[in-house]
Amino acid sequence: MSQFIAVNSNTCIGCGTCLLACSDAHAKVGKQDQPRLHLVKTREVSASVACHHCIGAPCAKVCPVNAIKHGDDGRIVVDEKTCVGCKLCAISCPFGAVHMSGTSIAGVAGTEYLTPTFVASLSPILQWEIGVYACAVKCDLCSFKEEGPSCVSVCPTRSARLFDEDSMEKITAEKHERAAVLGDFVADGYVLRST
Image 1 (cartoon, one colour):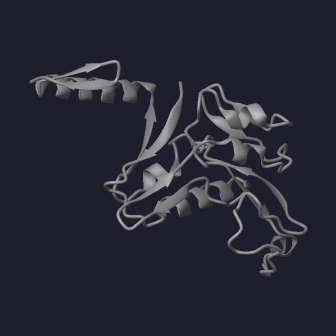
Image 2 (image 1 turned 180 degrees about the vertical axis):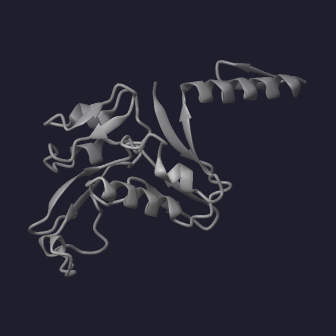
């Protein structure tokens, strides 16, 4: 069953709590401590964007070393030890949900020296640093936690929710029911207003 995280942009306040929870949860199990989702902010809207765990998974299809795989539960997971950092998955993701992360040699000892080898305005997909082994990171729905994704449990406004096929069918049925009450007819995804 396919699952994914969706964020209600009407209630998200852009606090970044989801990013911190994600980073902390993954660091505790020995994975890259880079957040697996992005916070998008504009003047009117803020929301986190995470992997959609696509059924077709273009990221998994282009991986030359099969580091990105479908789990039995529908999750698309990156094996950070197998990933070679080629960035094809980040380029192929239609949602921009895959990015690269790596720990610099200076950072491994506990002290990080900021010595970038790229212009700050350069796209994260094109950035690279001397001595840094980077691997793909993306939302794995906290597959290592029984209680589910960390970002969902810590969201102060309950904007982040975990959806699956059953919950999506329920939402679709509710929308159809509301449309019928309002006198609208839904056909092939189009709402036809009754006059």
